[in-house]
Length: 162
Image (cartoon, rainbow, N blue to C red; front, top):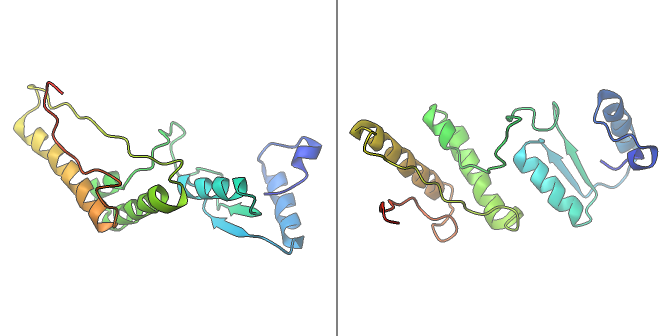
């Protein structure tokens, strides 16, 4: 939000500042972009837009990153953890958002990072099959979201020597 906080030194995010800035916002006539939601996607979009000179407003029902872990890995994931808990719709939405971020909104900020899960001899066949099924599900989510393998490579096995 644009405010006098830089002039007054009031940089703390708190209820008083929020109320004041919302009142000021009501008096403004021009907003280039309104971002709803202060999660990883909303904050990334707002940051990118503001850096490009757009008058950007981000609104969040709670505090920024309210629903995320304070130990965030800063990863933009494709929803596999939601899929594992049976939340297929949210998993698909997450994979679609990841695809938009990596292709359109923030290709300069988001890049694929390979995951390596060692399947040691102590890991049983059932657990190994579950890990592979998880990666295949991730590939299916990527395809369903319309993200091509040329942008986000599919999972693959890696030889021990590699």
